[in-house]
Length: 154
Image (cartoon, rainbow, N blue to C red; front, top):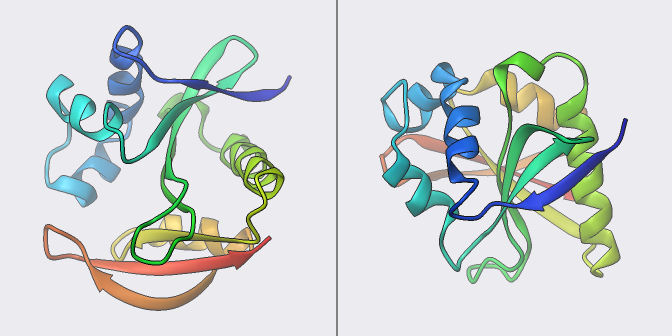
C-alpha cells in the first residue's frame, strides 16, 4: 500500500467535505461548528494561496493536506492542514502522509518547514512533536484563539 497525493478540484470537493466532517472535534476547535459546509470547502481548498490535495491510500481517499509553498510573511513553506478521515485514524497514515509531503518539499529544495497548531489541539501538538517539529512562538488566529507555531529542519 502506498500513499500518494491527488489535487482537489470542484468535482471532488464533496469528498474533502466528507473527510472534514468525519472530524467534528477538530471542526469545533477550528471554527466552533461540528460540521463544515460546501462553501467552507470552496473557500478553504479552491483558492490560489494554497495547494490542496487528497491523501490517497492506493485508490482510497483517506485524508487532506493543504499547504502554502511560500508564506509571504517568512518565505517558507507552511503546512496548514493534515487531516485523516476518522475511519482511517490510528493506523499511522498521518505519519506516512507527512513523510511523503516532507520528501516532496525536500525535493523542491526546501530545508525548513513550518506549521501552526491550534492551542486546544493537544493531540495535534503531540503528533507534530513526535515528527520532530519544535515550538517557537504563539500567534493569534483570525477567530482569536492561539496558534502554536512549530518548525522543523528537513
